[in-house]
Image 1: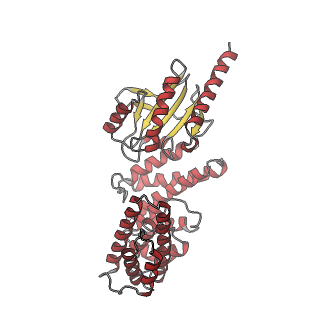
Image 2: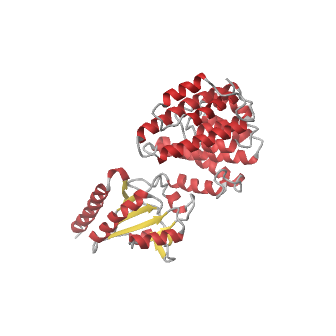
Image 3: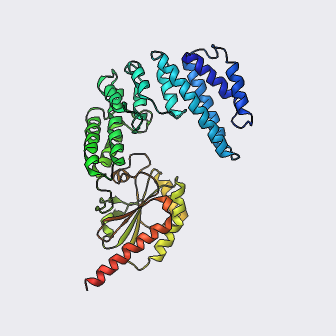
Length: 391
């Protein structure tokens, strides 16, 4: 089966198979017995664009539907899996086709398919001459247990690709890969330490050799800026753990006034990373207001860091929601210094610090605000007991 024939078939299936239809299996069977003409589009590139557009449209319709949500999601997932297998077979059969990179990116982005080691091996020749290889490398930065050849593939691109921009993006992907793998091994320092060293090596190389390269497809920043942020995560990862002293935050608050995290020493401190765009963050605000009110007159402080909002949006949200506690603004892009220092993995990200500034608890949103309050009370009671025992 050629790539051209497969993409034409998939495009026809996407048009004819409406995920909302009750008789979707019958429509798919009819399409299988009556395949579309091979010349459904003028070129492979046109066909890749066509199927990408149609998958996006069906995903939009699926996400907008409220009835039979789980059934629709299952149909979409099944279609993606079936299409991904057929497209991967076609790519393996035609690894030198000019549209191979478009097809591989389609596999990852729209069909949500992991890339097999066999596929990486078969397309390696095409990738080494493709200007789009850097985009593929950035999408391979996430560690995948089923991809044993992932690192060697990225190293090959970083060392041998003819395009400097692609080599830089591959080098950044390697640094990001090792940083994320280190985060996955946070409970075992003997495993984590060498992974952090590898991450730091590649990210430092990005800063020294490829700093000005645009971070395609993230055009709002350079590879050097992203590497700087990743390095902060790497250098502080071993410190942002329960039992470790919380890294200092020293700067200006959102209104331009000096604010240091260590100003709260001697108090139980809750540090919240949030954003106005984050639904769970906004859902926590009422609990935070109640907590501040309940802790009035006690050695307690709530401080926060706004992430990825414009300063105006952050100020507007704080005023509208009655968020009266101090707040740093960490910029409106993905490379904020404070959240990189704290290696923030999700939002809201909430830490409870004791009177010495030591991290005692890290909140996971699914545990609910009641657990957070219990942990705060526990640290507060411990502090009060220590004061009594020292009299």
